[in-house]
Image (cartoon, rainbow, N blue to C red; front, top):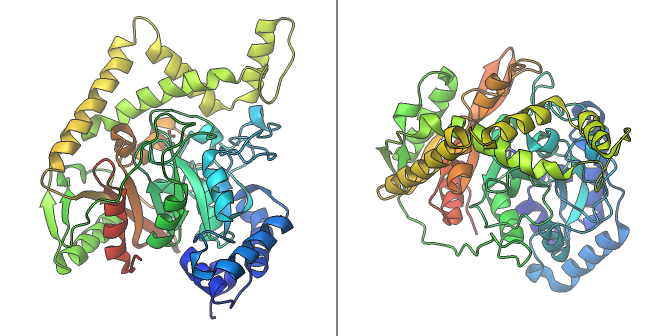
Length: 475
Ligand code: GLN
């Protein structure tokens, strides 16, 4: 085999394991070695776990005994974002306030992966509580982009993206509240998938904004993203918002909707050129490109940055120094709360808590929060209407490739990174980012991504359209 083992996709590794060309131990060792060597520079992982010999042996036995019937993820080493609970391991959401918090149970996605025989390499770096687009808000230092270490890997799941892009892990789990899987995937040259809201259980995900959060894969291929999604999806009695998303019919020829009116200022010319080339490639394959109008979209970012902080401010109220994590004593109970939160939270987290508390406060809730919820409803209606005439909607995942560290110190310029991604979270619809070619910035060749949204529950349509672009055969 010409590739190093840590460079394999899940599909390739699963085949090689079953053909007894490689062992689970060899695959683990290759990833663990690469992770150890590269992590000092890339800071993709906040912690690398020691080898779990029992799990490695068990996975090997399952493969030996069952061959082709073993779950696809059996024996596959994955990286897990630091806001997903793995029993007995720290899950800090890259925050000082949870730096000593050890999970007392497994998130449902982890339970499912353990049942499938998956191995966990470690917990990955992220923006504190998943708020950010660069991992620069991590309390433990930023992760770096393997394509150019002077640039961010994107965020908030930047550590997961860097880990997979640098072949430290075959695949990774991230979480996506406004783009945190798709944007880092685009910046690191990966496939990133945000499932339909409720398709994957949020039980055991440290909550950011509960009506927007979803766990999903960052992968080297569309097939891998699908394999990981299939392993973690499904209804869960521990999360009442979960739904079963049954596979729906996939069109042979896609009608791809493009909101040309949104592709204007702020979109880099060479990113636009790659997007146009991708559309041309689709047209050449016999798919139809249709112009669609989404008039409320220009307000999506503003609506997101009202709703998301509102929900974050209530979710983060539980970190008071009493029940979880770091506690800093003051002179009174109130002082205990104030000091724990003042010292435990970083600047961006505090900014969002303030913003969220403000938009929910009496006198402002109508002007901000309720208006944002109205805009959210309008977005949903407009997308539903557009989906009457198209199968998917496409635009670039981000307006520009990965930016340099320190380039977006003004919070609004960082928020603008999410201009294309937040709508899928607001509408609850599934969305996929697929690499669409590299652009040059100061001698670095940087990946860009194309973004597809499908109607609610039609997650499998996205894998099908993504595979058309990458030329993959989905099984
Ligand atoms: N970048 C967005 C934010 O800062 C999205 C975060 C996310 O998806 N978790 O809120």
